[in-house]
Image (tube, rainbow, N blue to C red; front, top):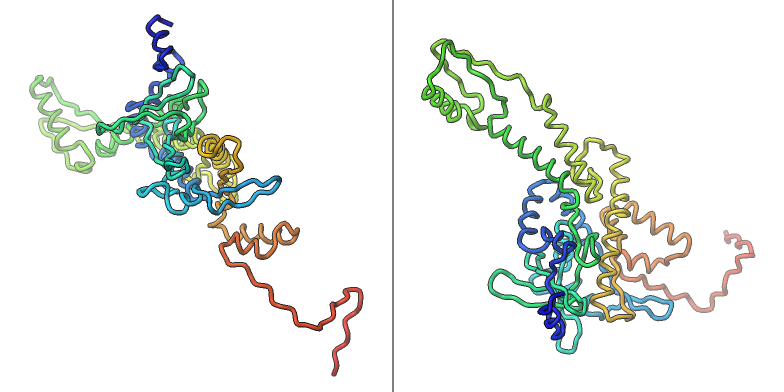
Length: 397
């Protein structure tokens, strides 16, 4: 450490991250990350995978519980529960907030939100911050500081206890790294195949060919013919136009089809590659090439267990660390059973099992379904209890 850095550390100033481990994360911090994200989202599979994960987590119920000894009761008056119902700010609902936070973590490796509090310290809101606005610094104490600039002249600093920082897997335990950057070659290969397909269509969806000319062409005539071919017979708008040749010229087309070039198979494999990065079953992003009725039903369960559950646990742990007081009795739970909201048959089968084994009673099932509890009908007076050991009396005729 230089003398200047030592003197600055004595007064509490931070050291900007310039060691190799932080420098390697440069593509994931600042404006360059936002540009790479925009480029990646041009790939439909990247957009579909990030959207299906973020939307699914945003739509499941968020519950706040308070622990009382060994019991756990729903904290109906906690400010976070109010935010989940009324919105985290005046401009953003809870589902939108979770969707933005998770999508940012999926695409850049980091999702950031500012924790807003009242004068008395109680939670008042959550403000999503695009990761492209953020520059990370490490203070002399070892804590992280997040310098935020919205690009309109407003800048402010947030400390680690003032933000929710949702990370994908990290290299240094502090800053998440995008899985798109970890598998850059795979993503680039998919992008190249898309560029080839777009160029193929721009040229009229037909391969090039050759013009045979008797004799020798002068260079000006050669350039003129090439420009005329490009202007009149190149591009999708000119597909099928009639080519007129004179002077003994002959056109011979190259017999290469997209199937021969394996363009279609390459693009299909690219979809599977991106799905593999995000742990998303291909049927959930409308890839039905290997789909059957059985595995499409299984894909939903697989998605909930191996894709949504890990991210839900990350969110719950981050809220426990950042939003709730250290060691406090409150906790957030993202109820993945809400994922069955669109599958009533499976949901009611689960209720039937719970009732049969007395895990839940009728009113608890009604509460889960959003219905009011059923009032018990009053029993008539002076009716002796029925002894189950006695046989029923025969009816009087």
